[in-house]
Image (cartoon, rainbow over all chains, first blue to last red; front, top):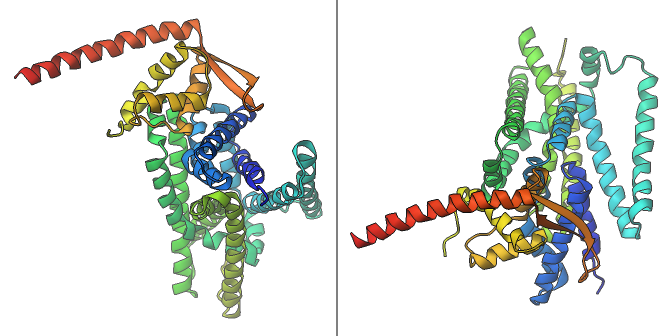
Length: 310
Length: 114
């Protein structure tokens, strides 16, 4: 029987790498740790894939380790904070999701084909470069398209993609909250937080405040959509319109990050293949949300109940 | 034996790490195993907890690290060792923990005689 463990380990490492919360050295160290754990379990008589499953369970989810490490990696945390805020921008949020999914599927394909290290990195980046160039050309062809946010969003608001992305972000909040609670409770984050005060504490608080802000905005989004559904003919006041617009903007960026958490939460139930599941679930969610959003949009359109923005 | 509380685990992590490294250089996985063995399973450190602490201690100059190829596996491995500054810190930690230990010893021996 073919041993798939090296591929799983590569994927596990990739999932850590894509979180952006680890340095190269730390990744090497964690990989060595995983290997040692697997070796010990195999020496105890476990099958290699089963040992990998057990070792992953003991080490914890990449997201959980990432959070723990983030408290010791100030520059990376600052960078991640910046990235989170950037993802709050609507277009970047949606596009980054596409990039992420494309990157993950390409990586898996290349790993399965036997590509490693430098060749792997170059080949895996090619589709991303192609996508980036296409988007760049598309943007240049429409000058000021990105800058004219209200009108742009009004136009984009009529597309199924944007509506579906923004409309579903609130659906995953509860799962995210539940998962965060689980991570905090069982992965020892409070233990590590206890060790770090001062600036680290401020950074941690920054994350919490930002997340709370996102929750509130997403709840606003949910309420505004329900309100729109109940009173389709109502003329919203400008304050509500602004709140809704803001919630939609943030919700879209939020979806990009939040779908990662829901995927990890769901995929973690089958740890030996959690990276496969993680990517599969994430892609599935993306497609399902897209279909739901499209169907919702067209139903609304046919009833002439489309959303209107200033 | 009941597992140690998170607070105590966290508070004792630095002196425990420094004490282990004071016995000789080693790597993360071995530290976790040693702690588990010495505490007979009562102290169970997660990897996500240990490594950030090690890196923090390294940043503070209390320990230093070196990448070498492990003889047993041929893989790159990071070995940690205590520095002079770390040894001084350990002495302070030992003194403080000994004080606490002495307080508890006296208190609980009095309780027993009463």
